[in-house]
Length: 457
Image (cartoon, rainbow, N blue to C red; front, side, top):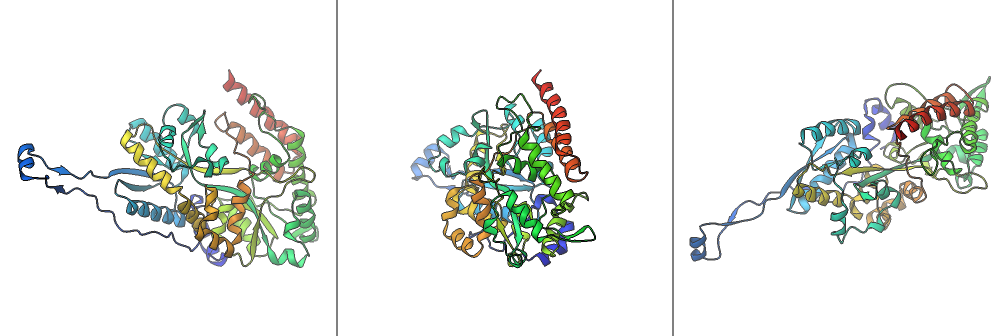
């Protein structure tokens, strides 16, 4: 999709769409599956007369799969469901569309309470797994010779583990990468391959920025509003949110303060980087993209899923940088996980497992990546013939997968989100209000530590 098309409709999108859709379609037949329920005669009239019964073919198991995807992502999910139903005669999946990920979890909570649950859901909740609301898949995985655990991107598969058991399977992944205008870098004599550190990126941003009367009219780079980009940079410097034993909040360490204060300096003092913030929903996100596509900024840091909305005759993609003298970056890579509610019957749980593992098969996860820009969850997706051909013509598709191979796992907030909330507030102070990182992070640490101590009692 060209940016000119995407820009016409972005205000009407839900963020759950999360930028779906390359033009390539899934290579599968979507014929309607007819359930087999007709009677078959006995082997002989004598046997039939003796038994008085007829053998019937076993009917397929019908299950519901709840997912909060819309737009092109939703369309691609429906196609995958149809392809699965057409590929075999043991399971029929009925897709139930929710508004977004949040609504999916809200409705699942009500379903769990009423014990009328779907068999599979595109959602994951660590606390609910610990409480027994989700079914572990370990026995099903052990009995599945085709599972090939080592072929999964391990940071994605590991995110589905809770207390040593596999409660969730990764459906697709996402990580924040860098998109830059090829013409701007070329005009300024900057080789994108040289931007291997944040220090070098800042130097390039300073060179590309334009100012008039003390106001920046063209930004050399645009980080995305919020804590995530700055946390990614902290991970590359070796910072931690919690101590190894999980008892101490570490967000006021030198790694955090130095990193966040550099972002503050680049935004407010040097004025070489800009932040779009506020607005409704994900408005700030699309404004950031808009600035780059309309030649108001040289590049930005955004989702791997942005690829479906970008014009790659204008922009190209690269991995996030690391730090001088430390090494490559270690940005967070998140898996979008699916699980099986424990209240589903054993028969439905088996059917759900069959569906979820079908989705993550080599060729299917590769097709999902090509169609959406999200990350395939298997390493072997890179060897899929269609994916290889596609990636030769669209090299940006391999960047998120390459970055995920050395990414950090997402933080699991033991306080139910209180630590993340404290970091969100601190990020606003640094990015919007020009508060020093030391002050903002000290306050965040105090708030977060109180919440952590409260749950430890």
